[in-house]
Image 1 (cartoon, rainbow, N blue to C red):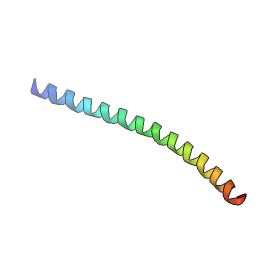
Image 2 (tube, helix red, strand yellow):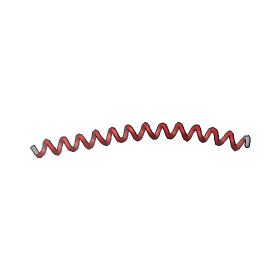
Image 3 (tube, helix red, strand yellow):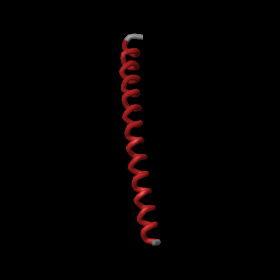
Image 4 (cartoon, helix red, strand yellow):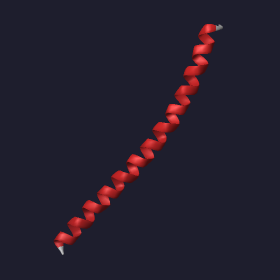
Length: 49
């Protein structure tokens, strides 16, 4: 019984990690898109003040 609980706990932690990493990757991608937009605007702004 104890082994089963330990196994379930490990699996739950692994699933939580996977979900967390997935959400983080999604968020990271959105930030990257945002920063690219900022960067492109900023570069053109510096060329033509």
